[in-house]
Image 1 (cartoon, rainbow, N blue to C red):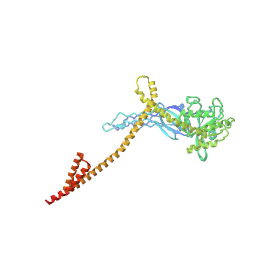
Image 2: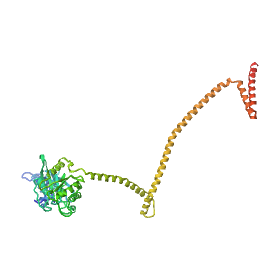
Image 3: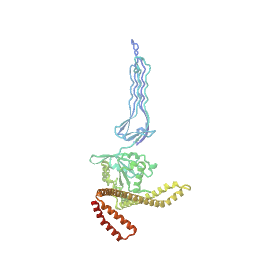
Length: 509
């Protein structure tokens, strides 16, 4: 059976039948009235996902599919027969796209999924439907509507859980024939497998999954070399990918590590999402003499990347069980711990050293970016002359300007600190002023009380005080005239002696 996974077809739904124009004609019955029937509906085109199909071969040779039209209406109130729908069976996993716009219309990814691609036309109404009390003999009917028509592109993506990838003649067909009941063609020349093969793998405890084997991928497949990327769509739905590496490959430029890198490069070119799926690396053909010598270097190279390698031999069955255990664990539990290994000590140290070097280079790059930004800001102010000279001058003067800006910043910071200290001192001065005003007010109040007491005592002082005042005045005049201190003292004592006599004389009189 030829495998076909992409076809272009044309589908058209049936048209609806026209309504009839008829009148009742019977003996002894006059004016029987309208009795034209309705037309039947046209058939629709429906796609159904059938799990028994694995190819689109049937649609390669028959590309036009038309559903039947509905029958026209007839007299005696007879309606036309509706046409049956056209059911097109396709394999599970078929994508239906519009051939002109490439728009995805539906993904038939489940068994029994139905989708109406083109809806049939509706039948027209007969003239009996248009009779009224004022129009009792309508002589017209309604025509049926046209059915839909589309040009579609069917694309098959096989539903598989695990996909096998590798170079041609890497042992993929032998691998799937050993773990499942699939019997693909196995030969000793490249590109033996020309079409994808599916196999049901029976695992432990009643668990099972589907594995897909696709044709080999070589370097340059994205450019059409070999069979190209046309079959990679069949592993897009897979949850786990197995990279089967040929350890005994011979030829120019063939090496296990090179083959592994080429496979990942082609996957990334086709779809980054596909390249990011979990990958199980299996080193095949360990039964060959040169395979053991290449295995150690290949294992160490992938260990430096943190990837585990499973050495197997599809011909003898060596190492198949640990590989299938890891695949089943990723598939059923989603854990990928077994697919990775710890990095060696040297590789870990090298990674840390690279990280530190990147961190050290980051500040320098930031500083360089800052200088270039400053130069770019000041460059537009300079006019006349080419832009290159302006940029070079700005780059040369940038350090001097930065130093001036730094000095200006430090002076501004000093001024701000002085103003802050002054503001801090101002509250203290204000408090001192307040205290001084309080003391002054207290002193004023004290002097006022002293004055009041003095005013109260003033009337009690009589002539004695007057005499004392006169003697003080005489002393002042004497001092002005230049008298000696002894004369002034004698006069003051004489004045004090005369003062009591005067007081007594005033009292006698």
